[in-house]
Amino acid sequence: MEGLRHLAAYLYDPDAPLPIRPDIKDGACLQSGCHSIERLADLELKFTKKARFKHGPHFGDKALEGQKLTCDTCHFKVTAKEHFEVPNDICFLCHLNLERPILEVATEEVVTIGGQAVERISFQGRPAINFNEGLSKCDTCHEIPTRSLQGQLSAEDSKIRAITHQSIKEAGVACEGCHFEVVQGSGEVNTGNVVSGGCLTCHNRSDELLAKAGDGKLMHDEHIAKQAADCFDCHTVIEHRHREDHLDFVREDCGLCHQNQHKYQKILLAGIPVAEGIRTSEHLMFKVNTNCMGCHLEKKLNRGHAVRTGAPETCAACHTPEHKKMLAEWRDRLEDEIAAVVEVKQEAEAALEAARQNGAANETLLEAQEMIAAGTEFLEVVRIGNGVHNKKYAITILDEAFASLEGTIDLLTSAE
Image (cartoon, rainbow, N blue to C red):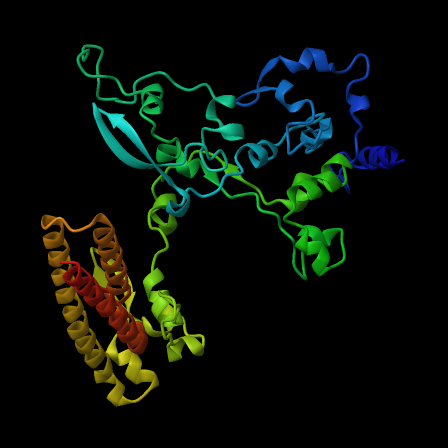
């Protein structure tokens, strides 16, 4: 009946969009005289100008989280010009559903370059991140060029080693090092809101229902196996195309290069404990929900670009004129405290080196190293996090640093 309804709608107005996507059973596509699984399985098709395709890997029940794909998972009526089509977006949703290669999830590996061991970050073994692993492997669809990437080389430059995609791969350079901008979007599930879309297109609002939206297997069991929904009824689109500016996508995403930026400032403002049993205190501004932009209202140049920064005038604007000199007083006090801790740190490091020279026990040396490391970390919280973000707690943390470093000296002195 559904098919007859769509046929009637098409005959009435061939250019009108179908009211809903019809459910086409595989048997209709694979009947005698139409298509054959055996013929399609190993047939390589030119899907686009730059991409090839084979049906074979998509047959069976391992193509998508154990789900058996049906013909109309990918093929469906999009326009009146084609019998059935496969929109590129369908391919990208499965093959390019990548996580951001942020520094926090990178691993470190040692590779040999020019006969020397070099330590560097890597996303190898992470197919959900690495462009060239798992379902996202570039040569699944594309033929990788073999020509040299050095346009300045001529055929006579035989002494210069040509740099190709193959040599770059052998050197362990990740594809996202040059092609990060070709993928945009992550295909996240749109659960919808009170006015549109997502789960709420078909379901009534329910906290229990929305809580299950992240269970990929359950969602695919209910919507793919039962052919109850299209991919984009739930998922947002992933784009895959060449872009002229390949730098902005990296330049504007701080987390790709910087790990856990401004963590020390947050520790100070929120009064997050840095040691067991430490006396913490939230900053008053944190308690009233003030974020960075509430106080950082002055624009300054830093290394050639403008940044937001705090200023005494900002304090006075909300508080009293007397608050204008408060920031300078806090900075002076903290600089004195930091200088005192740095001096003790240098004394502790000198004591540790002397203990090494005098043959102190390894257990003592290791304990001293750990105490110096702890004291240094406390110091860095205040020095890098800028103690004025919470002067009271910053002083407490510096006291912890002082105690740890003084304790190191006492430990090494008593072991002599």
